[in-house]
Length: 387
Image (cartoon, rainbow, N blue to C red):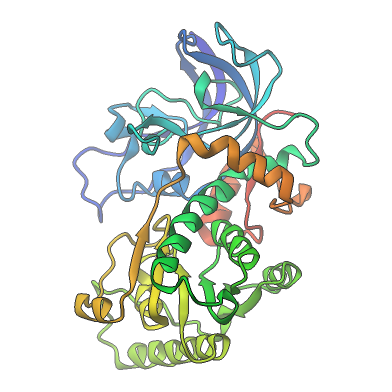
């Protein structure tokens, strides 16, 4: 057995329904796992990327991952950069290789993810530990002599996910609007690291691009990148719960005012036509506003569900307006090396402030800051071991 220092999530009480299920927290303790098998490699995590799936695991929504895995406790953290300590029998890797972790614990015959490493895949030990083991074919080496820091490479997953989602969403838009000049159409996103990376691709494809931001620092970052920033503080009551709408007339009026302000902003940016491709990774609370802002022949695209999985729309209206709905998850395993090489060769990389990286001792604070929205960076990172 191998024993390591880790941040561990324990299973919640059995039998609790979704509403009554208490949220979990990470416990700093010694975690033990079996020696690596023939297809596995012993590694030490260097940097990890804090992803929404960790928050989903902590909130036990939509599932209690420990119960799903039939385990009493588990170590999360499935995206980041590691150093190979013992490559075992692998011929692809060497001791001290620096690699990115591809989260495909199980993939289908076409290379798309079915189970995610260190989330819903049983027996996997994530990067929130000072030692772990990973299948050798899930390790993609960082380019030798790279121009970028390991902190920048640790944020790769948002870029890999954006690359895949943009490829599909743009392709869908082009099936109906391929003869149109992209410069006359708007791509819009609610915010977040994946959206930021995807809007950079849309900008390179010639589209007008815009994104919401809720702080002066984030607005400045978007402007630096040539992305139009829309201050979401202009419409503070835009969130709408379609399953439990408020009966209070004042709440309804506040929502309507925020919605009108948002739609006015979109009308101004799009020249009155609406959003051609809307990147909505939030989900239910903002979905009503998303659909109302869409152009005809527009595409609604998403890679996740940060706040609410179930969305509602009027099917007849979506058909009449020829809206296409794209849903993707991570990326295709076989594209990993090509996306990495595109990043290295085209400078499609994040800006990372080293002072904003959380240390391993601060992971509990990172979890709280992420949940409360107190992190300014689009790419929250934690450092496990010194690079």
